[in-house]
Length: 256
Image (cartoon, rainbow, N blue to C red):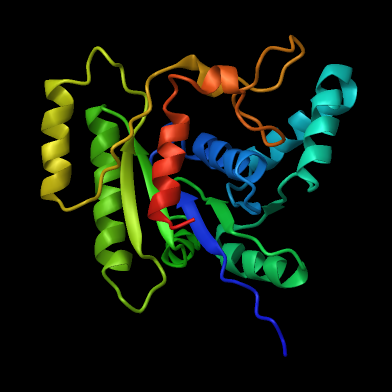
């Protein structure tokens, strides 16, 4: 009897506005689930031509290979996990789904989630079709009027064109607040959230505070790392970042 592979979830942190964190959260989610929670994760880097996540993996690998401190941490981590770093596959947006399916068919390992990092505009070739083939989309938003209007326009279009179409794979799109200044999360956010709820777009309970730690990668100073493709977020830095709370909420929504 032939054993069928389980269905792999396709998830994207996506928006049509750059600089709000889609690539950062793709890396953080992949590393958290793969290295800390024991899930098998892959990443499709479709952000042509810069391929930001693949470039980050190259920086991470070079840092580990040239620094005995990180080399020892990596050795101990992968020995304990008994699995390799999650794969990062580069693809064009129009070939993203075919690339993911081809990769999954070529490996004996069963993957729980594939995260997609797509260009920040639905007008790019293939982006809309790729989004239609996600299971879930999560869109970071910030309390800037122009950014928020752009993100809401994106979310409304995706809901109308894709989520509401029962013949497509996409089940849900959820928004979540990023770069929140705790001193300002008052009336302004209440006004924005009323508008979001009026449009019928789900908004996650967890918000991400405005903190520089989200930019901390591996470096020669050997300080705790927050964002890496080879390591999960350092436990000393995760407290107060709301990252774990966000990813627990997301894992619940996608039924991991």
